[in-house]
Image (cartoon, rainbow, N blue to C red; front, side, top):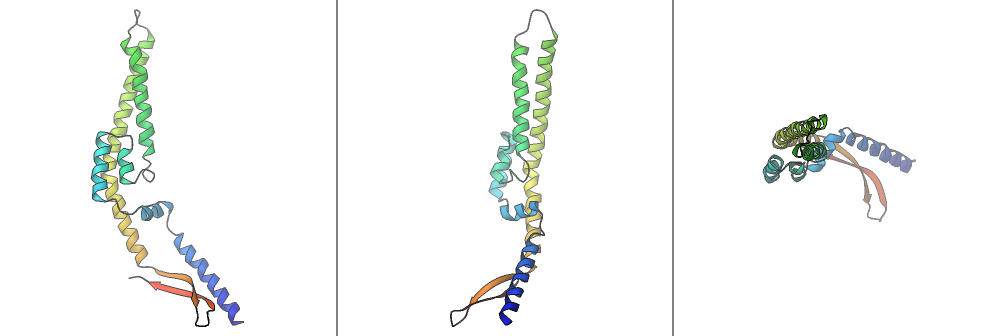
Length: 172
């Protein structure tokens, strides 16, 4: 009877320990997994995001997935594609000024405005997002350090018998 009680106790705490870990959102779990954005990553990523773009700054900082930087990569490529698609028609002026020439200038204008918009937002985010990311990381780190962690453990006795039990860890 005693061994059945210990095994039941072992499994009940095992379930509650895993439930406490699932309290964090996927975003918070990603922030804890990634860690801090170091100052060198922040500066080099900020410079790349400002001068090159296309999500490279976010990739250097390690925030490419979490900040949805793929939107900048795709958006800047598509808007640049619109500009490039409109250039040949604008350069090769036809003898009769048709609507196709106006469409080409429209493509160039829309592409240039979209590209400028993506670049501006990316430049702002690549410099300010790491600050909020690091603040959130520190907050989550403090919250998780104050928890009592109950973990299932196995002990080996002097008779080389494995005994299931419960380990309690209190982090202050």
